[in-house]
Length: 187
Image 1 (cartoon, rainbow, N blue to C red):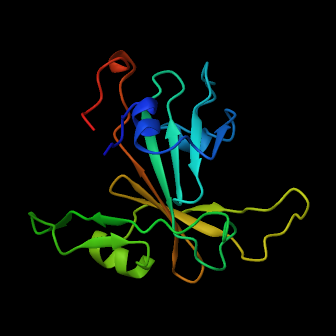
Image 2 (cartoon, one colour):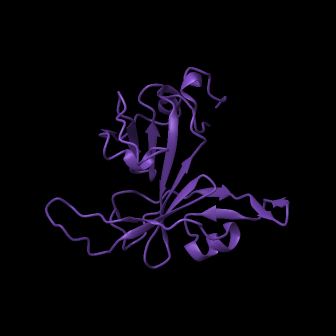
């Protein structure tokens, strides 16, 4: 298949063309920046490919056109985006570190996992969550309330107030600008 740092044409050759591409402005993408507090705008805007029927969004780097992030949607009732995406039925093997040993195998994150189960396996985040307040332009209130974004093991978990996971964002190590033209891993 393909992974982080795959090229856009590899994604499109594996799946059909995206159902909707979105070019994201600099301010909207600030949360994805390795240093969101810096006020240095980029020359190009990164862009998403949206696959609503697969429950996946893919963020591409505007300069290299390599995959930077995957957003996997769970489509839980009570979430702001409920019924916009189909459920992405993902299964992610987790690496668990306990007393210097690395465990894997039986620890699988799924679209049905709950936040308390994930914390038992991966530990509690050290930083406070980013609070996400969403509202439509026609209505300034979100009847479902805010969600909370926590980062653990190169994943961002969007957690609903009922402890369900609304989405999981997978991202890799930021690429140094000097290696922007390096070949991505085989897919």
